[in-house]
Length: 404
Image 1 (tube, rainbow, N blue to C red):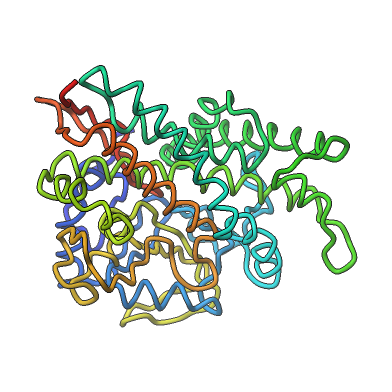
Image 2 (image 1 turned 180 degrees about the vertical axis):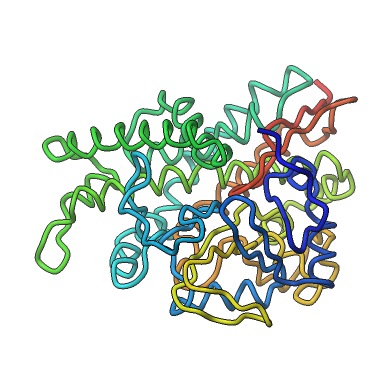
């Protein structure tokens, strides 16, 4: 069904509008100056703050803003009814889609798997993978930097964390895209949710008798307060690792490569000054933050003059917050050596991304290995760059050309 075009972004925004997905920055700039917290009745209705201060404050206010539903679509509509324990085939996704106390201990169990030590162990695997991918592309003189490269990396690393076969990567990619990118297509989203849930349920049952060195096995054999973790919680944590660890990171990698393909001065500087990569990684994450997260108003509250009612959906627009000139000088520019960068690409508060160490490593290594093999590249003439949006914004196709 064709949706009517947006005529007033302050009162009728549409985060799935094709023009908005491609270029949301002017909309955010206008809203910050005219209506910092916009309202729309589309997709079940929601509020959307666009300033760093408001997004950060709401992210930290767990008393008024619940994580029971972190999607960008309002599953409740206007009813304010409690969400069911599961949506489709995926149960609740601890720790991201639950509140304390369940959030507290599930996050504590998740963090060691994404610690600096474990990420260092995965870095050589990631580098070998990136190197093999880009070395196959380099002789061709042309490639899709998103589909052929960025989208091939995180899914294989997450497969290792979960202990599932790497040859399932293409299947996982399809499922994750259907859950996040096509969330507004209920039939497609539900089918993918069911598929993810069924596959991971089978993996959980298998690890009970045949454990391995992976997240699922460890959770199944961990006691919490003297008792085992329920299968539902293990399944939810595994599903979160898959869904949250794939599309988000490949979107960040793809956006970084799109930027370097369209900004030759930045590309040449990174090639000439590789020591800038740590700060450049943070800056590219800030400028092209992929993720918007939902919250549900738990109790009536007023934010910046906007009366929000229990059950309302709020979209934590971290990408818009990271482009706020009140928080960042030259906010709409990529400053590769930006020294102070308190970006919200990984969220804020108790739900800040548990896998941030892994994600930033993957982005850094992916860009390093691409530039090592292909230091000079640009968008192909007449190339159509395809962007996806909604929950996760990033390029799906970035056709580039380079010297052989």
